Length: 83
Image (cartoon, rainbow, N blue to C red):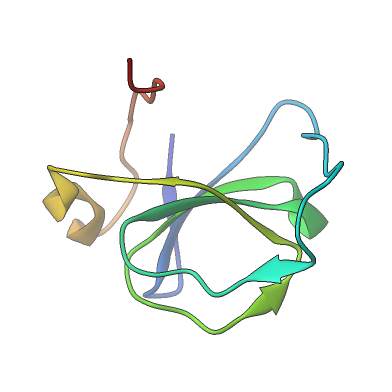
């Protein structure tokens, strides 16, 4: 379940921490990008471009069907890696 965090992000707490091994120090996310926010153990989908911030680890991006992130409130999503 993803919930709004301000007007720039949809977030969800993960059940366990992800490794940060070999990850960059931070990232400047763009709309539609997926990231791990290590300080809070959150999975994030960015609704808008954001500033560089330490602890953001880029995971990928949404290629199509991005309009759902503009919907306010909680949303349920299923995410899988591309073939």
